[in-house]
Each structure stands twice: as C-alpha cells, then as structure tokens.
Length: 393
Image (cartoon, rainbow, N blue to C red; front, side):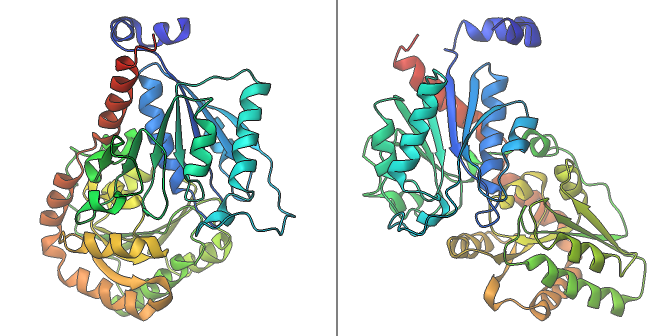
C-alpha cells in the first residue's frame, strides 16, 4: 500500500478513504486459435482498476500463442495453468469447449489449487472465456464471493453478479434472458467498451488533414484465417492502378501471427506499404489513418473511440451479427464472412471508400459519439459500488 500511496500521493489517499481496495483475479486466455482480443480488453479493465489502487492478478493457460509474458510486461502477476496438449478426450459440450484445453472442472480445480498453493484470496474474479459457463462459476463461488463475466456470444448460462457485453445489438438485453439470473447486473453496449488509455487519449484529438490517403490493415494479433494477406493482395492491385505516391498502406500484425514473415515479404513489394509488427503505438496509428480494413471484433470500439471508419470482415461466426448491426450505424461497410470474402471483394469496397473520401470527417465524428472512451470507468464504478455495499471492509 505504501508504493500505491507514494505513486499518486494525495489523490490516492483521498480515494482510499472512499473506496475499498479490492483483490481481483482475471481468468482469461489467448492462443493462436482464439486470438488476443480477450486478454487485451481485460488488460484495459485491469489498467483502470490498478490506477484506482486495486490489486490485480491474472490466471492464464499457457496455450500456444499465449500472452502471459506480455501481461507480465505490463506489471501484473501471472499464474500459468499447464497445457494438456496430448489429451484427446471430450472436454465439454460448449461450442468453444476446446479453447479451454481441459474440462471446466479440471480448469476450476487447477485455478483453486493455485489459490491454495500461493495463499491467494480475491474479492472478485473476472472471467473472459467462451469455454466457461455456470459449471465453472458455481465451483469458484465458494472461494471468490463476486463474479463478473465478459461475454459477446450469449450461448450459455452464467452464474455471475455482473455480465458485460460491450457490443452493439438490437434488443441487447433480450439476448441474455434465461442465461443469467434476474438480479444479475447487465452492462450492455458500447458505452461500456473496455479501452486502453492509449485509445482514450486520442478521443478528443482531431485528425491532422493530409492530402495523402492512408489505410490501415489489421485483423487482430493472430489473424488465424489470414485475412491480412487477402487485403494486402487487393491493395497492391490498387497501388498498381493508381501509380502514384498519394497513398500509404499500414499493415499491422501481432507477434502470434503465423504468417507474419510471408506478409512482411509481400509488403516489401511496394514502397507505399509499411509493415508493423507487435507495435505499442496502435492508437496513434489508428487515429492517423483515413480508414481501416479489419475484423469485427473488439477493435471496432477502439476505432470508434479514435474516429476511424472501416471495411469489415467477420472472421468468426459470432462476429456476423455484430458486423451487420454495426453497418446500420452508417460508419462501417461490412463485406461478409471471411470464407466468402476474396481479395476482389476487398478491392471493390476500397475503391468505393476512396470515392466517398469526402465524407470521412462526418464518419469520424459519428463514430466518436458512439464510444466516448469512458467505458472502463463505468464498469469499475459498478464493481466498487457493489463491494462497498457488501461492506467487505
């Protein structure tokens, strides 16, 4: 506690008088298959909780493509669950059960064992995992009193105190009827978007005008379906036709992208293309471009916060409805599910976006109205209020 007080001085001293300091555990994974988005949005929430003086721990399974070391580099304690890669047995009936690597009972038992081995206790556990449902949550309840679930797909039951779904859906509340209890607090919609400070800091910054068109390509940290290469092929064709220096393409990949070397080599075919790998300036780059070509995941709300429209491809089935709904907001253009999208499809839509370039400022303003960057503050306030009402102090 001394370090915390020294770090923020009087401001934190005043804050500690009002709010209970909580110990919070995040149970979240990343892998080549599931991508990095779950971890990144948990880090955004952890960032604000830590800023408010709370104590944060992560428990993650060490899948291939995990982000355990990345989480550690952000200053958090990470406990690893061992991967059981040789197991061929059925591990569950949920649509994404295989993402866990073990059964839910095995996973929660191992989680409890870590708590016992290291004498850990928590006021809250935040779960962001499509392979975890009420089976896991009921088992942990005797050890951790408060449970928050982050979800998008509304395909399984939960036993939680808070459910957060930051995506835009028509009749969002109806999706979780029968899946959570009536007294569960539901935080629904983009107003609760979990965004890292780097994006929030660019929310109020106007884009500097530039006669040179700039486009960003980004399909997440791992891009398992290799949409980046499709987009790059389309953009190389456009550059060849334009035959000018008035366009810049920024291609961004994560360290866990298995195709990154092939993509890098292809980027070198044109001086108009800049290759970026595992960058720590995503918000700055995203804010600087005129539009993006990307997937319909959590990057959507990062883009809206900084005001960047996009051409969207759904790279997972749960993204289809999100992309269709978002398109109705009039900011992005959805071109289909990844299996149905070719480089020709992307090329055609990029040409349409270039032709409508004069509308870009209107689109930027519209996006920023939907996501104000205060989502994680709203979520943290709910967590703190519940803990205070429970008089845990």
